[in-house]
Amino acid sequence: MKHALLATCAVTLAACSHATVVQEGTFTFRGETYRSITQDITTGDRTFQRRTIFVGARRVSCSATDDADCTLGVIEATKSAGDRGA
Image (cartoon, rainbow, N blue to C red; front, side):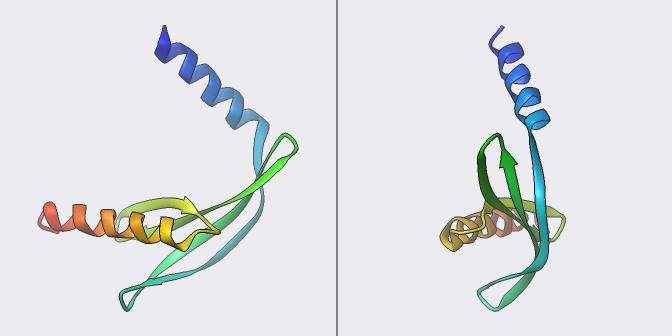
């Protein structure tokens, strides 16, 4: 029951939100430059920004306005890649 409710909320939110602006760019951490995409997402009367950073085959989703959030995501993604021997 709990999973059905969560799935319904996710579908409802996805149906009511859309990306209004998409910008490609880069994110640099420890001398490495990663491709990134920043999206302005509108949900109802609220707009926020999300950044997706491509770390090898992994995608890191983080706040476009908080580089510390993105840095932590990149650290986790590179740590996970190292754990797998990649």
